Length: 233
Image (cartoon, rainbow, N blue to C red):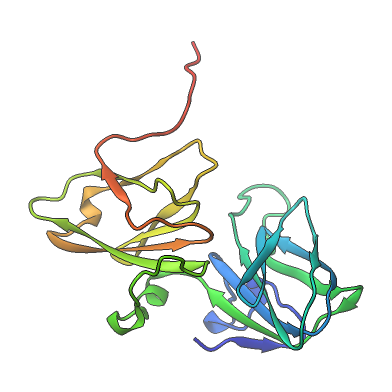
């Protein structure tokens, strides 16, 4: 995947992709090189995971826009993976929402420059790039975030089922290159509804994008778990 190169950060909607229409959903990865430690300041929408090379430092969001960069040795890659968590669909500001990094990224009050920006829309065309030769066997300690590939075998007429990701933390599930939905272990919902019409007889490709923590299996169960609830009479 070729990145967009830019002197300064560009928000999702203004990325020069998709025929000039920008990016509407998914994740965006921002990379640049730093040589010093200090206080990093950035306005992200909606959640931004910060990494030094592959080491996870913390998360920026609506409530937190600063993070401490520890000791840096030589040229080090700073990565900020920003998730678009959704959009407001009403009100006067409906066309003024911007996602990704908004404005400059500062390190010790100095703006960082020379960014490489990767659009991770995770649509069907994006997932179709993951050909068989791109995958590697699962290691005991994979580096996150990461994509994981699995399969569900259906021997008869497909039926509705529910995907349960016990032991996973936060990410997105794709069934046969279709986006089934996002999951997060903060709850309350613990299963994702998978319609039978999404499944084929035979092997079905399951791709999971996980941000932080994964297990070697996911479960398909016949009952939903929507978490604790109360009935209002």
